Figure 1 (cartoon, chains in turn green, yellow):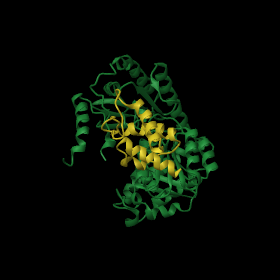
Figure 2 (cartoon, chains in turn orange, purple):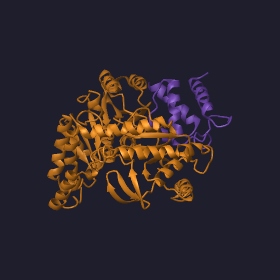
Figure 3 (cartoon, rainbow over the protein chains, first blue to last red):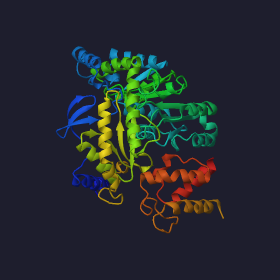
Figure 4 (cartoon, rainbow over the protein chains, first blue to last red):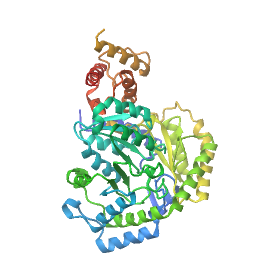
Length: 413
Length: 82
């Protein structure tokens, strides 16, 4: 027995990919051209899998703010806020997030992943219970596992199952937090948030919503599903990320509970991580203003989302349950998903390949994410390539075993 | 039939539907090694077991569950607590 024995299965899986000449998890973006275009494998490629929902990564105002921040404050903070101090920009962005949602206060984290780790690892402790939607992101599950609360999964978007579990908890609901997402990252469907708020109130539980994929995407002002569902003031905690619609890297949590400030003293993912660099904070502050004041970006995003979803639906692809900027195509096998993904890239369309166990219900998915920055012509081209490849991708023998084993990276722990 | 045996019998029924081939399942059957359930397979098994006994099984107990007997004992414990 050796230290690396547990990796052997991964090595075998990786070899299958390498032997097939396709490695979907190591695509090199050789040169970026814009928010929606890059050079990949020497080829001009449309980016349709980067969660860049509002296309703000190349926004001139955001770039200018980032450049100025680098010039004025340097390239990085070289440490955590506990050790090196809070930069004025960190504090300002926290106030702006709180104001944006109309809540008391906010904490900024260095990534969205760390926001979930930082909050969940300390929010619920021994004797507390976390009720987690089955489709929640790995960062939510990892954050839960860092704490010592009981973790109970409920069936995805199933309020009947959720209520059953709240009933089973009896008086323990006062120490229970429900965890859901605004838009789920793999299939693009929304949580039934208004119904979940009703349950939270009925049973006296807490509610945390992760708006990672819905911030800037849903609601008149882009506040996410909580705004669209009309329950904006009913959350206990709102988690979000800078790395999607805000076009940078970072995360945050917003809350009306005054205890949020105490999290700073207890949260190891907050205390022991270098704080976000000045250009990141500066571009994010600018992006947040643009996100709130430019609803036309959301209109363009949704026009593009409808365009792609409708186009693929008309071709007979099996899609996620509702129209959304995340358009997931279910394939009958991992091999078919891999081949379709690879052929799309060869034709200059970059999307995501998502295989079990990272997918709900062990589905093999080719996942697109649409941007407000996509042009109609780009969406037309993506549709055309899917149409050209449809027959060949579905004609593959689903039972063929060139790639039939899911890449179970969760087994390495 | 004792409560434990009753729990076992119901778990057998659920597992038979998931088992590959017509595998013989007993108390010592290993969910991963014998039934081929990977981490996600075990997660998919849980809701069926939870419905069966009207309990919620915390994910925290999963590292301690390897065999059918481990699962039955955990279910029994959770039924006592509920």
